[in-house]
Length: 262
Image 1 (cartoon, rainbow, N blue to C red):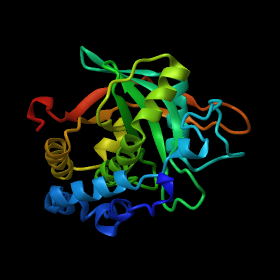
Image 2 (cartoon, rainbow, N blue to C red):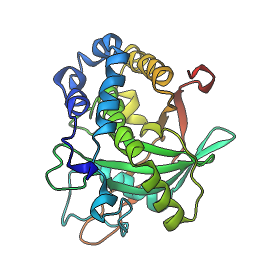
Image 3 (cartoon, rainbow, N blue to C red):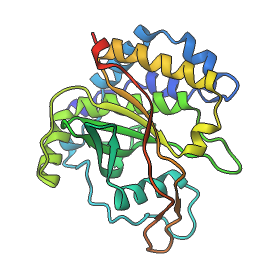
């Protein structure tokens, strides 16, 4: 079976590396990344990715809109993702596009032993029917949160696995949501509320945006960074749904130019 192949973890490990996570280092790291090497890591992960359908498992597992944890959970990103999917499932992207949020915490593992494979914060669909992998980040009073570079590379690892299972994702989306899906590499979206983005200086963000432009050309991929405005979520506990606080107002901070694809 395809998912018996040992998963290539080089891209996963790089996305979790210290220089990618460090607030004082990530901008320099972003500027120095060899995109060709990154592409090779992506292809290695895509070629060895786990396949849930091969083990009789689905990607869209029928979430209830309520967190699985009991009591107060520190996973603020999960609660915000649930609230967005429940209350604001269509996010405008300019005049002619939008993101339809399909589901949150979408599993990618096929087996318990699939080391270091996480869940996609949100899987969405663009107006043109392209699957989008959404990485959601927040900041708190105690932490700036993950760096934008960490967010970009983490989402890239998920894109490799989603792309390896593109036919299965398309089948489930058509079956569950009745929506058409176009062929091709998934879009990548990093989004967060305004306080997350304002916690990073412009120079550091520019380095990550520049990397995204280089990735888009090398990978033939659409990448977007979205500001959700001044919004957060009231934590859902003890069987209650998380609720959005504030108004979602999407602003595209940066997007790669499709005309520059190769």
